[in-house]
Length: 418
Image (cartoon, rainbow, N blue to C red; front, top):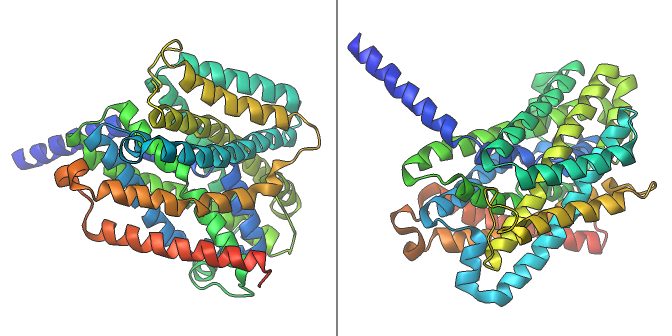
């Protein structure tokens, strides 16, 4: 009896600590499935069916490892990746990294505001007015809310993703065939297929996501003793986010792909689901798109603001007041306002660029891998927490494989092979 009570107390303590650290890993991983991610998974599944999820297992492992490395660097050094890049490589490299990062992130923000616009249109709401109100509220929320209150908002938005699980269920999938078609892809799988897989990889494992989890962990002020609990939370986040992406692919593959319907966005997918799986499945898909867009529209500009502050040595934190962190809040607000202005043009649909933006995200991963490996393996920086074992090998091999895949698929696109 005493042993049982001791065991229960121990687990109660562990769960309590886990809930304290809960946030960075789960929020960052799920936010990778933003509106652009939903569109990419949708277009990929509509084109290639469940074969679009062929890399889901290695992608889940790689997402967990890269975010684990980012969190470990943050906890051990008390610095962001941007801080370390500036200190180790100087201002020129910092400017180069930020320019690439800003351009890619702006593309992702455009995807998210386009997704939000589409979700309002699907629910027959005045999209222009709703976009303006939403963007202003987001900016005011981030400027005025503390880290803790903003995190609660993020966690609530994650619940919208469960609508994809219900939407997938309403399509009545054959789960044994889902598993078979995912693990053993078939059909014409040329260069376009591998280009699409890199886009799927690029929307799941993003440069902004790796910078964000690192900065967000710093904002949470976790200690070394809490690192193992943060690792558990990060691995949970990787499993959850790819489970949601799998459900999106199931819903689309079992309806749109089987009926050979061409779609180029999450909005078109929601509309196409109506005659194939019913109004409820369509509404659920639209609800998921709304939650994904809102989460991405908040987190991606925050990631840009974090990186700017770190790369150039300015104050940047969700607990910093507006006067001290005005540049941090300026870069956050600026990306949203730029996207809003573009989205207000009535005929603008930014989902058309979605695969290319996410391919660019995937193409920047080798640069990110270089910095992660460089810092995580440096004993002077990491001490006894230096990266080693399976994580070190898997990260290095993945860096080589992704770099080769990016180069080959890009050449294939240029020369129109496959």
